[in-house]
Length: 400
Image 1 (cartoon, rainbow, N blue to C red):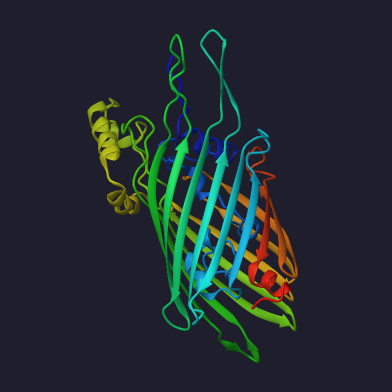
Image 2: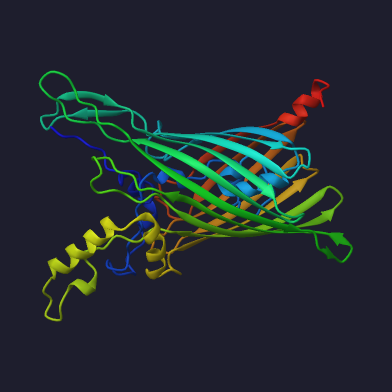
């Protein structure tokens, strides 16, 4: 008996409760974009999550690899490491989680370049398999992981760019059981790259020196991924992220930052047979036209898919994040934000809240998500991030 876990299962699960209020839109208009390895777009760190899932232009921190790797060139410390943990869909199950390890190090004597790396592991828990008669057929432990390395460099005193190369491995399925031994299906691999830039300046407003930053990140541009020997390949969640952040001092040691991010998935929407264009005036259904469009979608390359994605109601496909962060002496942080997605594209909307505490070389951040949809499985999502300032640790031991 052939048993396979669909790559779309995770995307459907994460949007399950968020699509509850669709009564005011037509079924043909509601068409969320589906991709492979959707875990690549899950926010790994607590700071970004608490501000409504943003970070393209915020101050550099250890977790900039996910948001905008070019920010590392402006990092204040020479090196850092962080570990993040997110129990995912905790309202439904208790064994799905995202674990993310990130680090960076400044290189060279000019303090204008950095190397970085991250490893993310998304475990989907243990799944008990059974045949049609209900007999147990063993358990599987599906997972997804990604490892990437990056390089960033200042091109001027105010501008930097960065590049990230990523290897992706996803194992979501299990093969068929024969009469003797099980035939475990192989996982699938893919490669992708990110290209980012960051600009920051310090305008004087009144008597205060403020900071204004702009960031952009083109992420997960690469190959497709498939679980059945190359048939029915899925697009990676290629994404364009644009953001800006403005920081101004409230008083000595007190700073307030406002940030805005906009995201556009660079993946074409899959054709749906409910689209009115496949029906004639007399109501008959044109199966041939739909099949041709569906096959064209499958055959489209990831690069051509990027351009095609701008043809499908591009404004409705953009998600927005707004957030704020209050910092006292860079030791205590309070954060809040809001994430908005159009009802035509999934209707995910939620608030983020969080706090952070820094003590010498260690910082702990926590975030909590509050979904606006009452039955959303994303509601009450928690994130924890523990960060270490490696330059500060060296200083504790008297090393330069």
